Image (cartoon, rainbow, N blue to C red; front, side, top):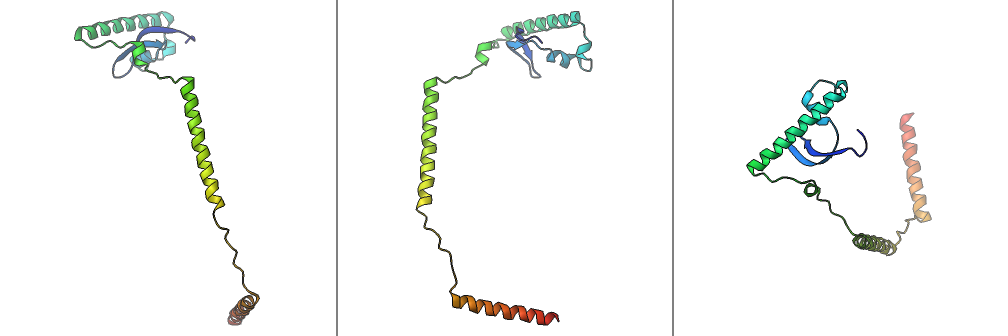
Amino acid sequence: MQPGAYFLGASFNPIGFEYCATPLDFRWLSMLIGAMDLLDLTVSQLKRAAAIKEQIDKLHKELGSILGAPAKSGSASKNQRTMSASVKNKIAATQKARWANLRRAKSATRSFKPAVKKKTFSPATRAKLSAKLKAYWAGKKAVKK
């Protein structure tokens, strides 16, 4: 497929045909021919297939006009919204303000937390605990022997 190769026609999908400007591709053809390899087709066969597809598209469009179906235009199906630069800047500014407020709130909560005081034993309590542990381990060693 050559870059910039477009045709105004119908693009194939399993549900039906959609009319819009589509890139020139032959995926729809591979769906129609099944197991046959697309690379095995000659240029004239591809041209003939494209012509038949255009006829089908024209008939489909004519059938839609007879049945009263609204014709889809390429511009109507691409309902893309764009934002102006000023709106983008407004959104960016409000988001920066939100993040600044969040950071400010986090730092405020951290600074007001009281420091947790480390618990320490007095020398007398430490001596009592040491004596109890020595007695415990002496008892364990005595049981083993």
